[in-house]
Amino acid sequence: MYKLPEELENKYEFVTLASMRAEQLQGGAVPRVTDPERKLTVIAQEEVATGQVTAWKREEAEPDTVGEEEEEE
Image 1 (cartoon, one colour):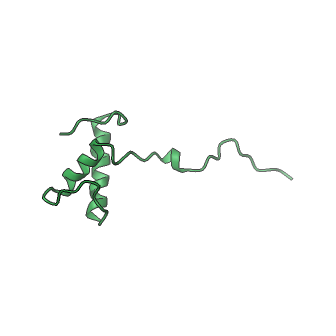
Image 2 (image 1 turned 120 degrees about the vertical axis):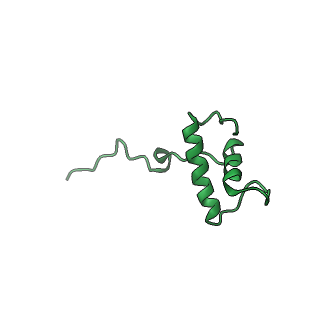
Image 3 (image 1 turned 45 degrees about the horizontal axis):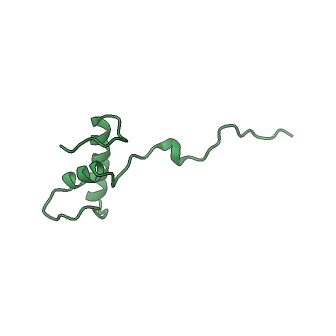
């Protein structure tokens, strides 16, 4: 098992992120670690552990609409 990166709060977040990355790799994404002898799940874990893959937060991707109100006519 790899060391838990500081930006991840717990091991479940690590496993979930590695699982999502493994699915991307199985779907044809280019690995960021070059080792053709290793399984894609192990490559995904290493990418997460070394910080090459970071967690996506939904709040960060959505436009900031808080405080915007429609004008009444």
